[in-house]
Length: 350
Image 1 (cartoon, rainbow, N blue to C red):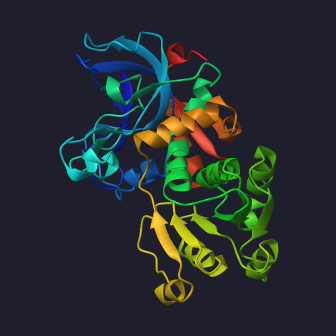
Image 2: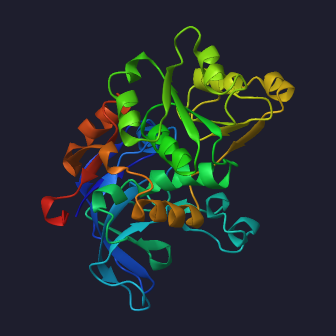
């Protein structure tokens, strides 16, 4: 089968090539991939700044249908439409696994970085980490379930956001858009900040999706004062840093009200400075989240099922897998929103 493979560690070494079709174990399912999204971590992998067990098939934000089920699999069937939790291989014995915090397991191997992923025609995964899709959720929308679960993890599980709270979302890309939607679904009044480049497409998308009440240019004079005015002079209760930039982190810290919560969602990919004196003087709570856990996926799927969030408009294009370089280029250049890669047309089932 065809797949996108990181052949060696280091910058580059990504190839579209033939690989053997994976074999389904007794406790596994084989998923025929419908589409798989390009994540920021995939770009980091291309540049050699995110670890992988190369050689490895890349891709972890995917949806598809079950093509084969192992003999011990009883609750899933061929043809079921599914998504798959990312952290599929863990020791099950350490303190973190016992708490259900699989992403923190020291032996974790995730789809697309620790074990073969879904930039391919097929991917094999343990059945216990597979979620059947609600009937009213399309495979296209489901391909965004992984980033939605990551956002659900930080908004719903790692911060305390209450109805009527002010939430600041810094960054208008895909993760920022999803964070705004989930914060809004929790009852927050959401303010999104971005830059001049976001005015043409990203701010209008945020308003169209319905999660954002106000947008503010962070690169304009008086931006902090404007946010203060929008929040009764005190500042937002929670700030979600979704840009992965030092300037964005500093803006969030300065915008927050005293005793507010700073929540790091984006992976910066490099060290960024934090004014810890300012955080101390304002008694800011600092938190973050690393991807998602099973509970995050279950809640994300419920939000999709009941129409609490609308993610499908964030899919800017579905490109053939062999056009991965164009997809990576668009993602790196921040053209549009989420780019999906799809295997050969015969695998596209709607």
